Image (cartoon, rainbow, N blue to C red; front, side, top):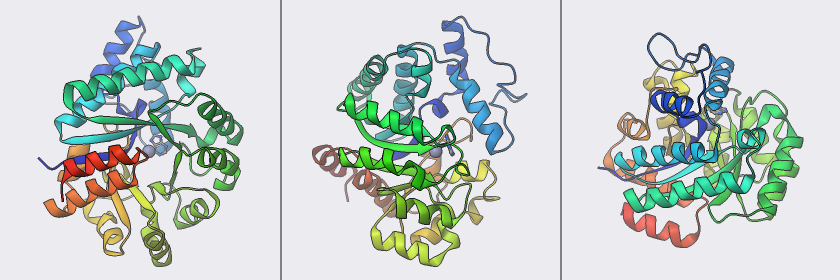
Length: 319
Ligand code: ADE
Ligand code: ZN
């Protein structure tokens, strides 16, 4: 099995329907109306309804151990597909709304990572992620908390949500604080919007990675700039196709980005929503074993883990 590593997966977006049902039962909750379609999968039709469905799934999370159960379950599945490392996007938004202290939430995530390492040999780390459409003030206070209460598994800061709202510059104070305190930074851009969104992100934010960034392929100068600066794209082809950015894998720009010298990784984003997994993304990429190992190596190199962890994982992946 080809070793794999993942940099772009959302904790709440990784909950399979069966686990959502279990969480609801465990917490004595009715499943939110409209959560599932007739096929038993999450029901959504476009980007906004996807974000709404995502929020509905989140309502099944109530206690710290629920967040831990989701992370452990994801790491177990990823390890079974050959993953040696997963950096998970975790939003403190939901635990905060539930009145769960930040430290109790992180404790649960830490236990999940430790247990998964012990049981499956997989390494995990956490990226704290803010939600763009909730605005820059929320983002800044989130980073202030992250730096005030450091945790050895929290290695980076990122932003998802509706790319069409606010500008990267609006979030520069939050990103500057995270960067100055030594956290790696990434941002969703060039997914829903075009190349100008990626240009703004790499101009105004201290990011070494871009979440998605696939629309960069519409602009040869941008691809050149990304290649020159070694900025790594967290590419999620299955997600892009499910959300209708591209009709199919043949039309997806993954190969064009690689040909232009842009450093890319393969990721699942919100796997059960998009009927994919990390293993499926590697299988469906249309690349050979050498290239896929190279992609796993790029993911480790671009990860925000410390140097010793990276060195160990690069050895595990091999040449
Ligand atoms: N949050 C979860 N998945 C996302 C995506 N694909 N784009 C933006 N925000 C997200
Ligand atoms: Zn994402």
